[in-house]
Amino acid sequence: MKERREARNLLLPGKAPLVSVKLDNGKQFFRGQDYPEAAFGERLNDFAPGYALCPIVLSRSDIEVFWKLAPEERMRFFFDYLRDRASHAGYIALDIERNQQELRSVRADLLEAQIGLATAAKLPVSEIPTGSLIGFRRWRDRQSFRRPEGARRRVRTPKRIESALGKLEEQIKLTAKIRQHIASQKRQVGSGELAPPVLSVDIPELLRNITSQVSDDFSDISGLAHIERVEVSTSKQGDGLDIFCILPSGKKVDPVQVLSEGALDLLALLIMLGVALECAKRGQSRFMILDDVWQSVDSVHRNSILDFIFEKRFKDWQLVITVHDRLWARLVEEKARKRNFPIKTVELSRWSAEHGPVLTDTSLSTVAQLAEMLLKSAPESLCAYAGRSLEELANRLSMTMRVSVSRAPGDRYTLEDLWPGVLKGINKSSLPDELKETAKKVNEIYALRNIYGAHYSAWAESMSRVEVENFASLVVDLWGRVHCAVCGQSISLVYVKKERVIDWPCGHNDAKVLRGSTEPA
Image (cartoon, rainbow, N blue to C red; front, side):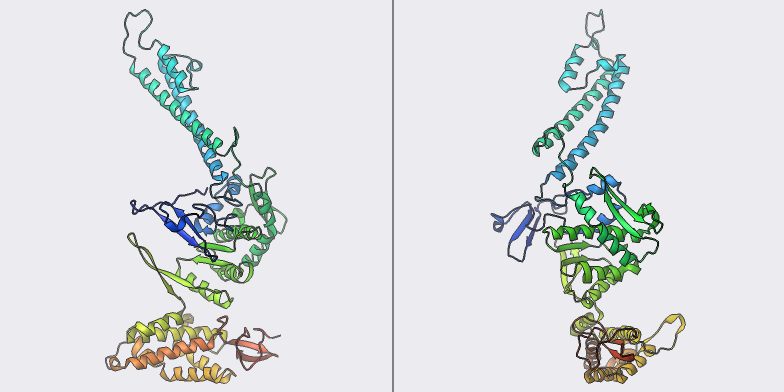
């Protein structure tokens, strides 16, 4: 189960941790121990308005643990949802349950110690009191362990009995301590003899409400023909969460029996996102942090889940997405731009225990990195990356424009294989003259890629930086011109009145041809 963890500074114990968040309305909220003067009068260690109904962070560990839980524990996964305060009774209820579970274990040890003393002292178990420490000590002092019957003086208690008495006393102390702690927790929330409820009373209804949406989204993204639909149901008592896959035959089965690990993670993610969407309908702010939740999603579903996020369910949300895989990061960045989802990329460049993380604004796209290299990289590095960037662009355009390319062994193509067909397609099109002129200039100078950037040549070292920068600038310019400035889509083969033309399929650019579909009518 999830556990609440307080902010602590493990690396620098002398410094108290502090986290502050500033909302767009100017208000600040703090969590930690050493508050600045600005925190006076603010709500400390509590929820900001609009952030109480569900956690704002969805992490990889949440998805990993979800299918390992039994139905009862799976329901309790949502214990911190639909709350109005950070110190809600659900946390105390979970602590009480954990303490009661520990109490059951301690009681078993207590009985074992009681039996051990009864065996050592040759007494009936029922005669040894364990209800309270005071009662046990009074009973012990009345026993004749130290003065056998008929003896005139005390003798030393046998070691086996002394040891058994000590063990039992310790178990009675521990049992009493846990009981007192549980009673104190119950008094804290005013629940009397009963433990407070772990879950908000509205959680079962909320989970039932998302069934249809989760089922439709899972079918759309996964495309699994052997799954008719997904069913999310709660027990009549509201303390269990059952999830089933319905097969075409109508049979209900556990998802673990019929789904791959990647599909299971996808389903768990959709359930948690569905709960977040339902909470937003009830007043939760449309803000969420997705902390590396994609890692085990099957690669075939990656584009679909990003479309789901950026274009469908979360298109009007503010999201913070963290990834550890650079390929995933580029895919997220590219997909967000194509779907007109505003995005800012921040990279964790380094971290140290003394200074913490160092963050830099950046872009993971090839053209953005090339533009940045124009300002600071050595000519040979700049030329090499410009040639690589041009080859990547030619590879993409050869597919979107569907140009003719001679097959190569293993489908491994070089710039020499790809660029001529792309250039020919651009020149034959009705694209703007400025784009054609840029492509022409690139064609005249791209030989630099082989002369200077890809291979060592002593005489090529005399090439000026101006020539290299000109080549790199032209590649950057070409990237910009072949991609839509609004959504980032590249020029492609489209059909207008059954005529094949090269244009932007999105229709955002003022091209000379009308927007068409990507397939013939």
